[in-house]
Length: 273
Image (cartoon, rainbow, N blue to C red; front, side, top):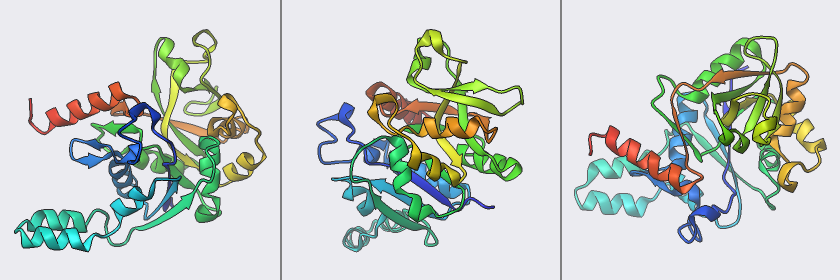
């Protein structure tokens, strides 16, 4: 079955970036001249996805506005002779792409955010992209690689990367399986000494729809939240999860240091010093 839908959990407060994010969603913070959420949307579209489902919260209307048309701005740009910029604004997304906005009424964790998209997704496999994970320098997009892997195995897919040292405790860490590419479990933010491997799950997933039933039955986990990792762990124990190693450069743009590093990296790529 083709992957045609992607879920973008974007309801977080972005407290690390206050006061900038008091009124503006952190997902609209720009890497040079393009917001994080647009990079993620373009990545999904490049993988053949045509329905973008944004799980939003209070004060996130600006994300909807970003992907909507703005005829007044277009007209002003054309009047000023800036036709190229007018076309760029007009074509933020291709015309065949549908955007759906779902409200997460209360922030109860990533798992709960994904669960809020259940009706919009339906009974089909789907991708999940976390805009905070800015990924660049890939020959093909991470989501494309996950979609291709899913088409071969029919299993949920995680993008993973090696993380050595104490930093591993910031991630969901996989428990290796005897079968190459598969995992037998995943642990959310273990202590460094307890980490089952040095392989961390990052913010790109392709998930089978049974994840919704699992999430619906889960209690609260780490941080007193409904954790997506716990649901994926349940799938993994049934030998239903595979992994794809990240080929590219990842920046954690949920942190100020990662965000600044991403801007510097992309700015230099454009030929600037």
